[in-house]
Image 1 (cartoon, rainbow, N blue to C red):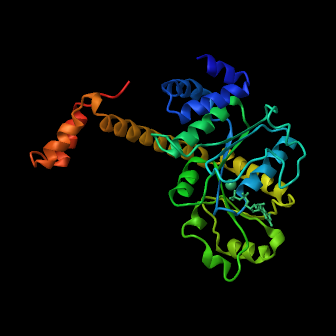
Image 2 (spheres, rainbow, N blue to C red):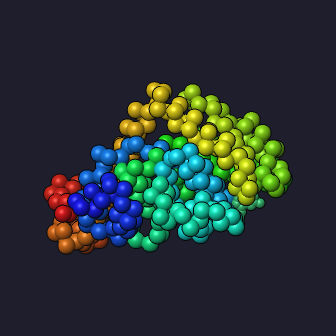
Image 3 (cartoon, helix red, strand yellow):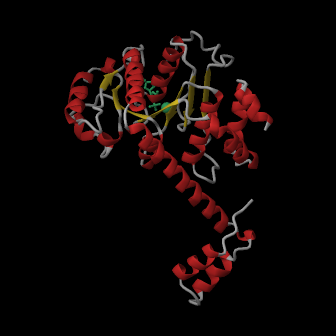
Length: 310
Ligand SMILES: Nc1nc2c(ncn2[C@@H]2O[C@H](COP(=O)(O)OP(=O)(O)O)[C@@H](O)[C@H]2O)c(=O)[nH]1
Ligand SMILES: [Mg+2]
């Protein structure tokens, strides 16, 4: 496809267009994604999660600039539409802000939360694939730390960064359950507010080594950029650890397994919610309501004669 060639040639507009096609469920997106897939797998995918307002977007803005200084190409896909990206300029600091639009080494995109028949997670990581094939060295994915999305990120990113901030009172008790298990790197942002040391050492105390990696705790202040370099170094260190160690292949397989399963589920849902596919879904619903068949038997029967769309 022409758009894939353009993407591979470094055309930023092609990347933007492709992601829009993914968002719009454009039939061409599936074909394009199949075509770019062999060119993916090169970018370091980093997920950032944490409660709203903790400073994820601000941190990513800092990291974008840090990686540009290291001559790396950086992509950002944000699922959180509430906080803006400036593309390296942070909190009133306007340096370079105008440049990132034309800088082919930076691509920032907020995903619309509407639509996405396959789910936002699937669309988000398809967008990541586009940026991977475009040639990004590192791609950040920001999600709001609410419910399932954190776990989802952890299973799809190479490196999961859990962002917290100093809290009043007994900080560790306020940590959400499960948060200690999903992070590869922990960040205590807003260290300028004070209480960062306590929070960081409490976290550090509670974290354990998992599969040969002990998650580090990094203190940052996205406000003034403190800790950005340390965080970038920790990211690189984790990526190297994964790539050189025995975990890489297993994690790749986990990701592939999950994506395959999700794609199958999506395809099934698509097939069965669309009665025009001629599989008799609604008739079967009627038969179940009339007690002429039971859901399990009916499901088996429908799956046997399955005709997938397109
Ligand atoms: N004091 C302080 N405020 C910060 C820091 N980082 C971000 N903020 C502010 O916290 C608010 C939320 O930041 P944002 O990056 O949008 O958080 P997100 O919701 O996690 O993406 C904004 O008003 C930021 O200016 C920091 O290090 N110190
Ligand atoms: Mg944000």
